[in-house]
Length: 360
Image (cartoon, rainbow, N blue to C red; front, side, top):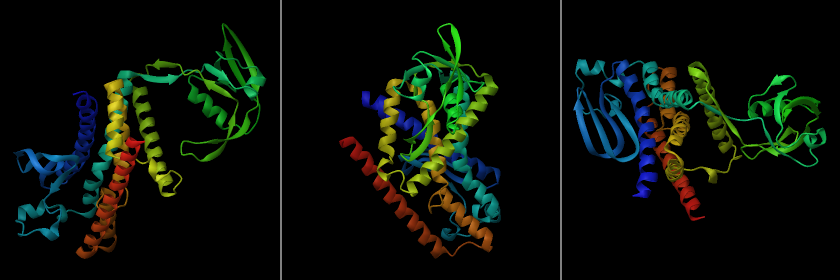
């Protein structure tokens, strides 16, 4: 029961929300452009439950790792019977290429929109937790130690710019090239200003790459303050956080292709299940921002130009737009087979990585 409540259930909830919004994007865009939607399914495989509402059958299927929206005329080459004039007007293949691209792109874009809504709502309710500017450690023989910084000092400003959180301090020092910095600190009830000259050191970034960074040798105390940003501030922070994760996700994909990040670090459904389980045991509330992050990852990965993914479908539609007609069916089938092969190969690797982590 414990395993179900803290691993299976949160995993299914997170995955279900992500799949639903992804397919909802395709569904709403199709409806907007007048395309007849035959099926809206959460999951693949045999139907568990279903209900026909109007022209669409809504399903929950056996395999929860995905979903689909089936539109009339989506595979025009496979249509067995000619369509009526009414259905022809509602056929996906009969719509302008730009509209078809919008329908296909709507799924991943809804994942990004979902993340934005989650972040904005989360910051409105929970506020923003920021790391304080209190120093928790001064490294021996560092520029900060020589300048007179002490544990417990609170940094008030850097070169005249007020600092309200630790990230601001890092950002202000990061742009320095070894020039003296004036740092105002609060020590007990007194204020004083000290001068420190950063030293350029070789460190590693989040991708493990060596970079040269200016450091002064202080470590944060690890204390947090809760800020109430107000509705507008929460929305602004939601946009900022969403864009930050989008940039990080795109950069991670690039670094994987460049082999800067080992492929062995990539995880799949098992890793996501582990992470949702750990977060659920700590606090179910932690699953909210986690869902936003995974939603962005899902949206970006679906936009990759790989056949069978939305991004690959968009590429085929762009080719059709450019040459004025669809690619020959044999070429499309070949590309789809290649896409399926790559996707299966990727799934084998990520599941292997997940199992390997479990056994370590």
